[in-house]
Image 1 (cartoon, chains in turn orange, yellow):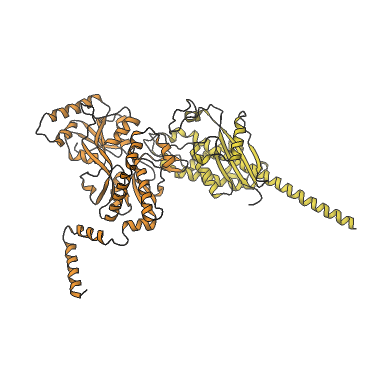
Image 2 (image 1 turned 45 degrees about the vertical axis):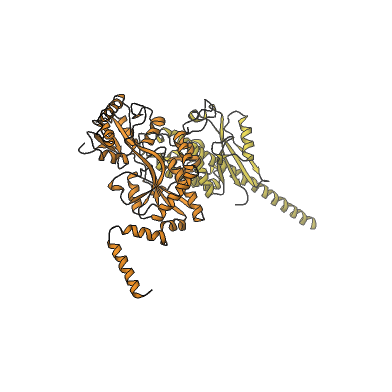
Length: 344
Length: 252
C-alpha cells in the first residue's frame, strides 16, 4: 500500500468519524472484520455471562427469589430462557459458560447495561417502548410474542366504565385506535410501576387520569389493599404478568376486557433480550440463539410451561432455579411505595 | 529369670491390647457424644426457624430483624435447654458436662455454617410483599449440613424414607435404620453403630412430625402444599426422617 493510498484511507475514516450515521459504517466494518476482544470473545474467554434480571417479580417471567436446599434461587420463564441461551452459548464457545445473575431494580437494569456491567438482561421487556431512557440499548428477536399493556381492577363499576369509554370512542370513526384505547381510562386513577412500559404508556397518553407511580407491582397491590386515598381504580402493566396474577395470586382482581370478553390491550408488545446498542456481534449471537430455540420448539414449550401449566414456583425454583450473585444484589428487596405523580 | 521375662512380655502385650481397646472405646464414646450434640444443634436450629416461621413469612414486613446474631442467640438458648451446654462457654465448660474435645471443635463449626446460611438468606427473608419463601426448617437444615460437611471431616445430613429433595435420599444403612425406626413408637433415643469394620461411626437421630409440619406434610394426602409438593398424609408424632452423622474413627 502506497503512502498516498494509506493517507486517503485515514482521511476517509476521519471524515466518517465526524459525520453523523458513521455508526452504521462501523457496524458494517465490524460485521466484515470482527474486532478482536468483542463482547462474544470476552464472554467465551471468561466463561461467564453477566445477565441482569429485575428483582421486582414479574411473574411468571421472574418469580420472587426463594430459599431452596441449594440456597437462594430465582426461577421463571426468563430464567429458563437464560439457562437455555447459556447452554447454547457454551456449545458455541466450546466450553461451559456460566450465567452470573444480577438481580437489580428494573429501572437500574438499563443503566447497568449501558455502564457495561451486564452482557444482556431479560425481564419481560417490551421491544417497542418509545422512551428517552431506553436510548443506548438494543433488542433481540422477540422470545415472547403477544404481550402488551392492559389493566386490572377490583371494581365491576370501573370495568363497566372502561367498556363504556371504549364503546363511546368506537362510535367516532374519525378517532384513531390509539385515542380509542387511551381514552378508555379517562377519569380513573391509575397505578403503574415506575419506568416500565406501562409507565411510559401512561405518560405518553396522558388523559384525564390521576397517575400513581409505584416502585413495584407488589407495592401497587399493597397501596390498593390499604385503601389509601386516592384509591387505585386500575393497575396498568404487562398483560401476561397481570393475567398470571389475577388467575393465581390475586383472584380478587380481574383483567380489563372488552364487551366481547376479550382482553383489552392498550398496546401490544413482544418481549426481547436487551443488549447494549453497540454490541453488534452479541446481538447477532443472541438473535441466533433465540432463533434456534424458537425453531426447536423450546420457546413454545417455555411459554406453555410457565403460562398454562399448573405448578408451584418454589418447587420449580428448587429443581431448576438459578443462583444469583448476592453480593451484587441490594441488601434486601425493598418493595417500595407508591406516590401520586405531580400534576395529576 | 526367663520365666519372669516371659511374664513381663505377656503383661506388656496384654496392656497394649487393652490400651488399644480402651482407646478405641473412648474414641467411639467421644465421637458418639459429639455426633449426638451435632444432631441436637441442628435440631435446635430447625426449632428456631420453626418458631420464627410466621415472622419469616410475614408479607407486610421488609426488614425482619432475623439476623444471624439473633438466630445464634436463640439457638444457643434452645441448645442449652436441650443439653444443658452453654455454647458461648464451650472452652471453659465444667468437666462434669463431659463435652468431648471433638464436640468442642465441631459445634462452633456447625454454628458458623448455620450463621452463614442465615446471612445468605437475608435477601430472601427480608422480601416484602412475598409471604412463603421456602425458608423452612428442612431447607435451612439441608444448607447448614451441606456447608458444615464441606468444611469438616464429619458428615451431617438430613434424610427421610421418601425425601422431597433427592439429595437427601438415604443410603443403605440409613434406609434400614429409618425402616426400623418407623415401626417403633416415638422415642428420644438415637441409633449408633460402627460400620466399615469399625472404621466409621454412624449416628441416626430421628425427627418426628410436630403439628406445625402438618400444613405441608399432613392430610389430605396427595394435595399440593404451598411449595408445590404433594402432601404425604402424615400425622403428629409420625417419623419425619432423621439427622444422621457419619464420623471416621482412628484416621483423623
